Length: 272
Ligand SMILES: N[C@@H](CCC[C@H](N)C(=O)O)C(=O)O
Image (cartoon, rainbow, N blue to C red; front, side):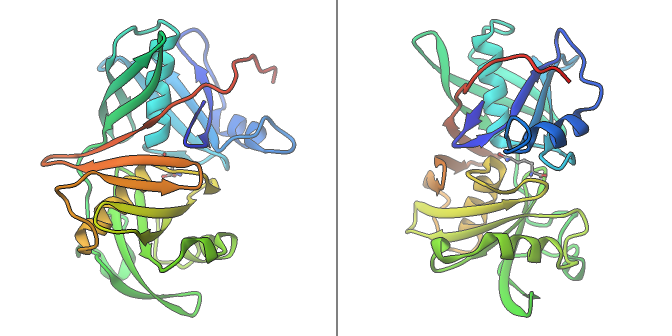
């Protein structure tokens, strides 16, 4: 399934167990020698919610949360009949997320997720700035000066505002940020071009997967950073344009809400 082109291989673990999800992700995420994906997501039974999800990046590392993935998990639960409810609760590595599905023609097409409160003082902030609110903080990465805003959406994000995202070479910049030594837990780096008070355009270099067509937690982090930096208005829903499509983010009183599509690409069986 994919959400704005952020594609994962999903395994229904209600009826089977996957013993080596990290190895599976490394083997089958490869776009030439595998199936091709940004990683693997396991859909598991939960004792406290309708289901539990675990996300593994393409390099086998485990993430705590995936905004595009959790929408697809909701779609799978509904479409497969495992949980025929439009209001769902999914357990993730960063807590239980609530989902509201939009159904048309008998299948779930879109979902809105309560992503939890953003944290502008995340534990995984750059070592130099630990404990501080990191908004437009000056740092030097790759011999160049940048202003970074750090946001945790259950996973770590570093947001940088730029004039034009299309001009950037993320295959160079992404590894520079990741390898800067500032982010002990690794980092999802979002490069964001403000488009007004209610819209931003962004590209993302994800921890463990490289550049992806979209990142749900990243879209929330970017919108929160744009509001914190005074570039967008908190009262408005923010349209986030990504290479794979558009997501909507609203920073409500208590938490962030992420809305966007969820689509099935194909179903099949893997022999491994
Ligand atoms: N693409 C995801 C985030 C996946 C996990 C991330 N790479 C990490 O390691 O934190 C999303 O849609 O949020």
